[in-house]
Image (cartoon, rainbow, N blue to C red):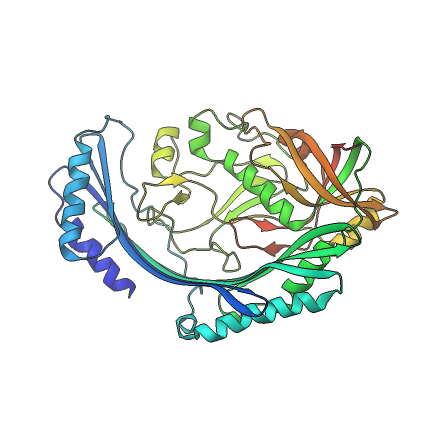
Length: 447
């Protein structure tokens, strides 16, 4: 099937005029989403999409057009529209398509043909099973906000006049659930999920237990007193935190003056325990892919090693402007031009699981969830402030639940004050993996 997409790209690229660079991105996908409520299907959606994006660069001007169809007449029209758009564009001397760089495309086991053969009834049954498992996990679980199953199969191809001809495909699925727990007048919510390439990879019991635990352990939560404390970020919170850090390590952010790490290559920007990797070749990553959005081979990029900043992530354009090479971090779909972003972030894990980290710590606060994270972080100054809830850590054990407080610091200080990274690396349905992270001297503002 991917060969068919490559041939579509070949036909359009063959129409390139002299002095013209042409890039064709072709994509096709199918997806299913199921939501159940009290044992019945509340929502069911199945979708198929296909489309093409064409980028034309001529005379230092760029034109782009896309269409949500692969019909032959539409393909020619899209190329013509991209050419027309280029005539109105502002000249930019740094424009140019990606070129082959000699890095071999990895062979990753990301596609499961059997996913498309799973019946809709079986997918519904998984969501119903998940809902039942959450209800049975604790008598204080009184409601299910949502019990979902979702999957998708996608394939894509990139063909250019500069010699790139690459295709990839992948499949993925997940279950997620959000529940409500009551105890007297107190109400709390919790969530859980499990991800995989096929339904048999999903752990329904673990997702249900996680949702129930997150909801019930916060019952009776009170507001903590304000002060400074060592905090332990739960894996899901760490994944969100890494997403913020990753956005500041983009070559595009550096060029636009929106990165606190600009001009700091080679410097110590974090504690020695902090090693940050972007590796879309890791098949365990939910966002793994054999190629990036410009068709270059995915590769392992060591962004921060032992606290030292090694590199920023780049696509072809930002690399050219920065005087470096692409790190295969072009991010896009067929309906957009390439941007830059981390694709599969993770921290090098430590040797201790969360209970051991708590025991070593003694006293502190476990941060189980945060709210308003993106709006509470300034990527230029590094100022960090977000709403949070969690549990007190006392004597190395989890103690009373806490809510309605904020945690504040700066990104620079938090990175420098990392005490330990857990061994509980967990791949989540996002571009960052989770792991327990111990950070010293964070302001906790409550009562």
